[in-house]
Image (cartoon, rainbow, N blue to C red; front, side, top):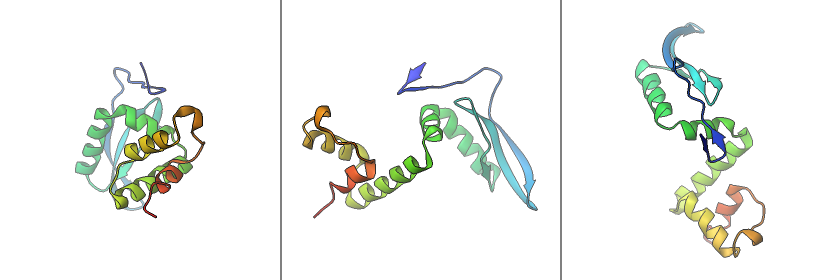
Length: 124
């Protein structure tokens, strides 16, 4: 089922599991499973944190798939844009909508990073 350009792959019999492992002499909790066909093995300090992560992945597979497919540069841009928007008191959606509106629509939009779009809305 395509959603936002991503196809989510959830197969019966394949579920995420929580395992306890020793890593560099420390007890770590690992969530092992596949998200959008890619194996993920994030580590946590407690079983409670690992189970909370696992539940969030199951509830939001589209977001997880989209985030895991983003490049490190895109992730940095999104994080920086989010921080700017949060400091200035508006959302990223509001910034994107305002940018589209001020540039008179799709045919006039300039190619830019989300951080540039949010930064151009800041107070002067």
